Length: 129
Image 1: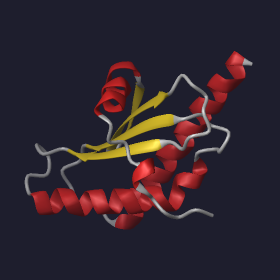
Image 2: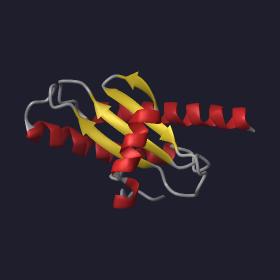
Image 3: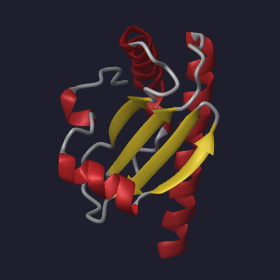
């Protein structure tokens, strides 16, 4: 079980971030707007993730960092929900609530988000087979 979240699993390349927002699909699962994009080359690379917290909703950087830490932690513990058969993916998790949620709540929602992404991806894989 790999519980780490190394830089290679963080989405930081401008080009990929643009691609995620321009070509990716999105859905909304409170408190997250989730943007995801399955990369064309079905490489064996890991999925990369980006965490963002709305400045409009949470004014103080301290609050935003606090939420991001909780999001990263919840993702790190549950990223195994994304099936390893899933191709390279870019995932953007955008927190749009103005409340600082409890970790347990954020973790529950991120688990739901990852399960939903996994089911969408597996449905799409079956369509292409």
